[in-house]
Image (cartoon, rainbow, N blue to C red; front, side, top):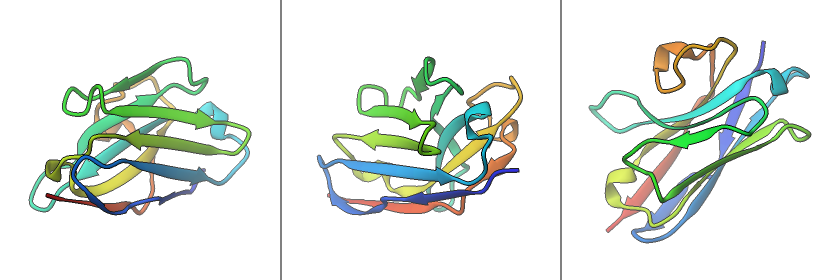
Length: 124
């Protein structure tokens, strides 16, 4: 089992940047593929980015492509999400998640463990 704790959210002006962190407990962090999702008020949780257990394979959703970088440090049990050129529509609670299976990385249901989320608010 793994516990996830996100940090790094906050209020930022449009055009600014944020780096979110997700710290994982446990000694098996490197066995999990990791993902970032977000959920805006009244909307479904949506995929933002994912990274393989080794960090060699990453991808970002089309909505954030070119503005998103996901990375991980298995020695620190941490995964990061760098978001640049933020827009008001990026405002949401951002969640990190971990999965063991090879289920599709863009699906909420593929993930086994979730953090509590961190709020990102982008002002215009």
